Amino acid sequence: MSQEARQSIRQRLHAERGTILKEAGQTCIRFALAYPNTYFVGMSNLGMQTMYRVLNQRPDTVCERVFLPAAEEWGWYAAGRTPLLSLEAQRPLGDFDLLGFSVSYENDYLHLLQMLELAHMPLLAAERDERYPLVLVGGAVTYINPEPLADFVDLMVIGDGEEAIQDYLDLVHDTLGQPRQEHLRLAAQLPGLYVPALHTQSAETTPIAPRKITELAQWPAYSSVLTDDTEFSGTLLVEITRGCPFKCRFCTVGYVYPKFRQLPGKLVLELVEAQQRRDQAAGLQPVGKVGLISSATGDYRDLALVAQGLVDLGVAIGISSLRMDRMPEVLIDCMVRSGVRSCTVAPEAGSERLRQLIRKEMTEDVILAGVDMLLAKGMRDLKLYSMLGLPTETEADLRELVALIFKIWDLMKKYGRARGALGTLTVSVNPFVPKPATPLQWCAMAPAHIVKARLQALRQALRHESHIRLKHENLKHDYLEAILARGDRRLRDFLLETHRQRGDWPRAARRLGFDAEAFVCTELSQQAGLPWDFLASERQMQRLHREHDRALALPIVAAS
Ligand code: SF4
Image 1 (cartoon, helix red, strand yellow):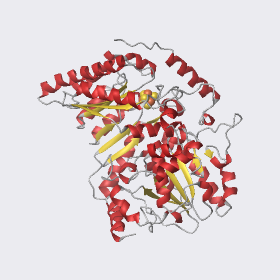
Image 2: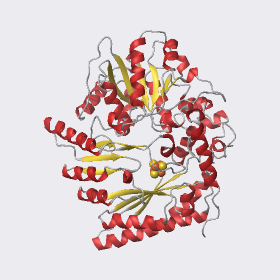
Image 3: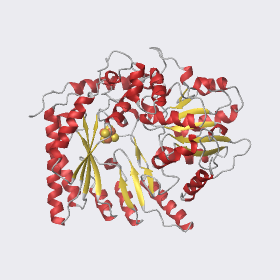
């Protein structure tokens, strides 16, 4: 590796707070914790941040991070001689015992393949022998549908990983040096451990119950390493809840996580104070912002305590998004007092009919009252999330979305003019992707030509308002997400070919004769088994069917 590259890695480490540097003793397990995206993206991922700390807390384990090179770093590896290196000790990945990927998004599967290649490792698990580290996957995708990755990895940790990985590392410690097949056979007997090569799918397949931790306080999830070189720069992220008490029918969070769990507010404040003390001891400016990570911030029981406590500690408060029917005034007040002026709201659909279908049941009055409250308290900019192409969506639903955007914008203009400065309304729209393990998993995704036409209609409708910004992902990205979400092991060739075609999946699909659009735009039979069914209990399956039928029983004709 070039001197320039080593220098760059050292500079990156130098700019961090909280890097863990451990010596790997003879009997230590060497664990490379990989995030299949760039450093900038990965360092804002709480799963990655938490596992880094959890793994390094074990005296018998040394965990070092590794990321996908950013565009400007690819040249370092281009000649193919330098394998991908870990950050902390700049060690080739092949020198580790375990290479564990924390995977949150389907579109990162291709990055995982790229990282294996950059590490000079065969992509397929069947082609790797004892000379290579075992490849593990954990993270959000394992709760939902891990099957497209089945042929590429040796093991998966299904569900909450904090305790499952301890059991697995105990096994690694006890069986280090044993033949790989024997080791995998033993690993498959641990709860929540999935060894795809030993698992055949059939009607008799025993479900694998995802692991869950009951008390978040035992394994609090928060940033271990702070850096400015990441999306949430200089922000201490703390997960205040896991799971969601709501059951929106398109969303995996409400269905795959067994229970809504909450971190005690006192502990949240202790974590922030501890970080501030570490900063002061190191002669640094104390952390200035805390990001509260939750799917249901408004339902967090210690919200008032935490919001007030953070204001007293002098930190700004960030949150992911708010439900409009759960607008905790105390939080908004504290956010504004801490200097925050923008907020994200997610009605997810423009018409009340579609909001009922997805079970995000809130009336337009509730949404507008929520927006009014945010603006009255001093928020200036808003971001609004909505989907396009939901099942049974018609153009009338789209017109209702446009009308809702303008009603919100009218409110923003009223407050903006009184203040003497207009804010910005960012409308972020994405196509509906039928996600496994949700009641809408059987539904078809809208074909690309329909989504494009609706996006164009939306663009037209908003074109005269310079303070309203329309944002959406590249559609190719959304359809790839849908393919990988719905796929099974037969996607192996598609992933390999897309990897060969440097991510150009439409080209890969054409070469393989794979009709990708039909794959995601066709409704699935409720009678046929689905590749990810083995992760669900009978009770969960019944609930998905019931909720699906209720959703689709709603009338299709929308208000004109
Ligand atoms: S969309 Fe939000 S509120 Fe609804 S289930 Fe998902 S996380 Fe919960």
